Image 1: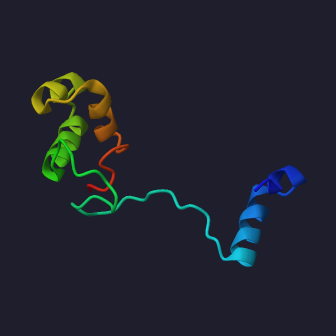
Image 2 (image 1 turned 90 degrees about the vertical axis):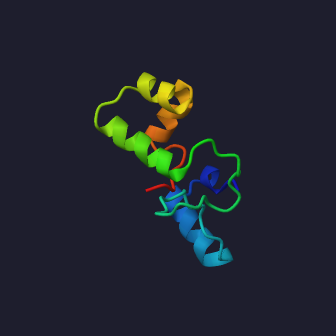
Length: 92
């Protein structure tokens, strides 16, 4: 839809969508306190939920990314995403 080009504010567009068509705005992923990944998630995970918890705990206590990469066999990018909850966000 190009309603915003017609001068409608985004809040108003969202309100119109909810009222008129029953369409709900897209919800962003929210943390789920579970060991099971969300539906549709790939089953090829390299880490178990227990490993993810251990990584986050060690990082919180001061371990470097390089030390964690060596210990768990990941490269720097994926390790950063695990620690910052960009990946494995459902693991509490």
